[in-house]
Picture (cartoon, one colour):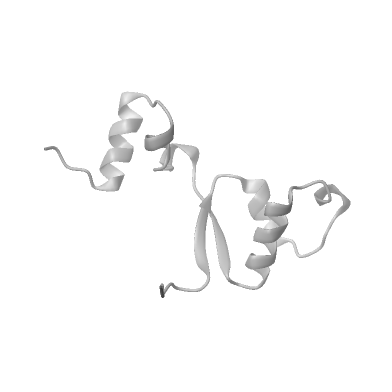
Amino acid sequence: MHVEYEEPLPIMVENTSLINISKNVVLHSKTKSVPIKYHFLKEKVVKKVLKLEYISSNEKIIDIFTKSLPREQFEFLKEQMGVIPF
């Protein structure tokens, strides 16, 4: 299977600390206890394979499938997905 995408591939995250760690190429003592998955992402950002972009928690469309939401947020996310009334 061949999938084409623009490089770097944008990944939307709400964790600003992760974005800051990925932009700082110096390894500090504070980042030693950070889980391996964050170091993996940092490595991919440095190699320009991925680009981490901030998204607020109110705009995460995946929440519509994983959380119970207030009606107005549910309606907003449903509209963002392009769901139309039946």
